[in-house]
Image 1 (cartoon, helix red, strand yellow):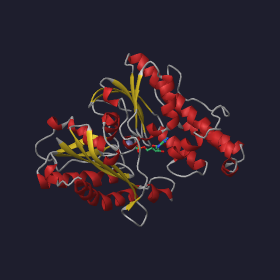
Image 2: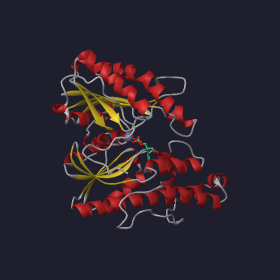
Image 3: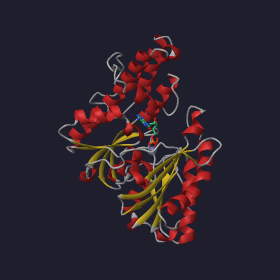
Image 4: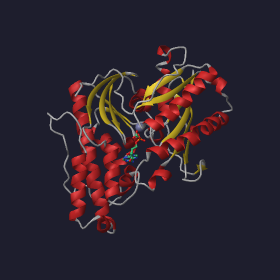
Length: 377
Ligand code: KG4
Ligand code: ZN
């Protein structure tokens, strides 16, 4: 069964074709980084406009690259939330229109559920294409293609596992019992892990998005992650959730005491040490909590997903810490936002969607994980 996936929840327009939930025939991503870079973060209105310009041409181009037409597609899948509501609506309305016009089923999925599914995806290098959208150009190809598109060993992943979803908008620990069966164990009470990377990068004057930039400095051979003693928030046993805003404030105070961002940036050793000390604090918290969740649930399997799962320091520390457990990461191309995870997960929902496309479906900025009931405030 071939599913066309559409993902527009934030600043990546993505479309994909996935067969039987796992085999990615094509995954095309148009990143808006260059549009938002000038503003130091995602501007929702600009994101919606870029999605609108790119989405249909991207679907056409992808189908053409596979010598297929929409006729060959068995269902259309789209992210319904959570995310930027204007951005989500572009994807959702497009998917509704395509489903209505072709008579194919429409399957809506939860964005974080899709991230948690990403480690199952299998692809070849050729299947994935990354495009950077420049401010004035809609479709400017670059040579920057993500590498290592199928992680060796991921075929062994099965339910249940502990999912650590770490992205720009979310940080959650989840007991994943099935493709759409979750138990929320912990989440952030303030900033998400990726947001902390982005904010620390901004306060150091390093640019957006911060994760890959800090990762690069922290990974320099001479970087000393022990030079600055930064807090590891909420690591006590009685502290269930995550919190990263205090850590960000601690870095801000450190940078001020070191003479300000310009002074830090002008000293390569100092910059590498600040980045490495910050990154290691985030990694310690993420993996410390994941380790406790594995112990408390008795599930010795961890899958780390979302944009922050690209982080080289996090990957190395996880391999080091969990020698006796099993740790899985999606291939980098499936860590950050992509439509392959949407189409892959949708395959598991194919039997529970109504035959007729519901044209009244809406998008949601916030949305609990399926099966997770929140206590009202
Ligand atoms: O999953 P994603 O593409 O979008 C959301 O759903 O939020 O995640 C984007 C986030 C950004 O905050 C970005 O800084 C972070 O993932 N990120 C990284 C790395 N690559 C992307 N964080 C740490 N290290 C990286 N290498
Ligand atoms: Zn995401």
